[in-house]
Length: 265
Image (cartoon, rainbow, N blue to C red; front, side, top):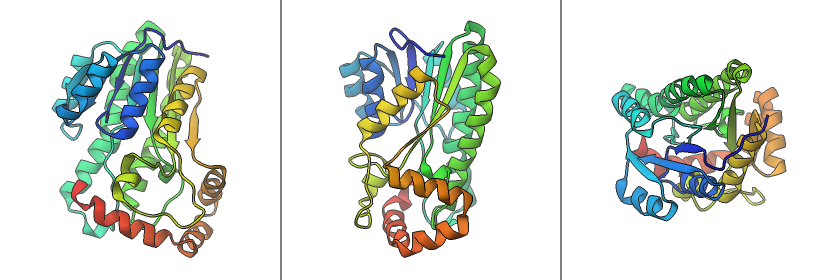
């Protein structure tokens, strides 16, 4: 089942960040009419002017804002649920409120948006939903239990809901980037990877989002081949994966990310 993006009405959340902006540009290049969402109008407005898009400012931790965003966005052919909080650091350092906020933004909001937009897509017999996950939703790492939990949940939801939607002509994909340079949570943290660990660009992620929609891919991992292999092994052998991560310096990378992301919980 293919999907024609020319003229499609698409909502991209988290469009204030570099990855969301790359996705928005890629969809606009395919002929989509865009609605861009995020918490910062000062960042969204210039992008909207560039792409001829509409802006709906919303905080996805607020259920009323999620409802308002969907109402103002109107009928959609494409939803890209890209917004997320980092969720790094030891879980014992999190307050109950921080845990609830992370779950709201990373899991509850994407699920609610997918459910509500899918209802209209099913009625029309056409549409596609993309969840932006992470390789952290396929293999666990230290100092990231909160983020792992949300991305594992998002993956399970996506693959299951995809099966429910398929008979109605509606597609659903989960796109899972590895370490992204120049934009996104890892780049913004300023963390340095161990020698030999490669990254991908925001544009590579955006191209894979378009491919997932057009080709109706269930799951796309956007990472160098060695990380894809390591992730696959880690999903089957978690104890071995944890030992290899420690030997490769993952603890140092995680610690540096935590310090830069602490105020985003």
